[in-house]
Image (tube, rainbow, N blue to C red; front, side, top):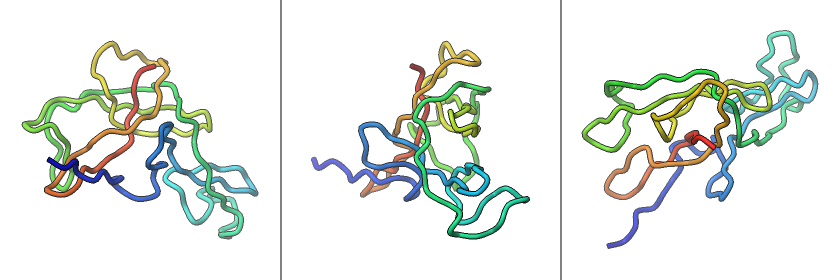
Length: 141
């Protein structure tokens, strides 16, 4: 049996492949506004909208859990997540060192506490006949 090719769910959201994955964001060189996912222009409404002012950056791969919940029912299509049949999973909002709050699937539903340190990782969201689709996740440290 041949292993399926693993591909990111969307190119350019996180470093892939990587032993230490990081989310890819953008930062305005003029005002310092950081945006995830990366954007072509500064997201600050008071700043200039000039492409040359925006640079790509990698976010810290650690953050603090700001809040979380457990998804108790399968989200509607086109969202897909395995394993099947559906099993509840935790979703958390994480404060990054760059001052962003990033939503993501948590690798565990157990022993979650507001303010705990989480580390970014990757995991399979779902697969089809040829590929496994990988997304970012947060795991307790």
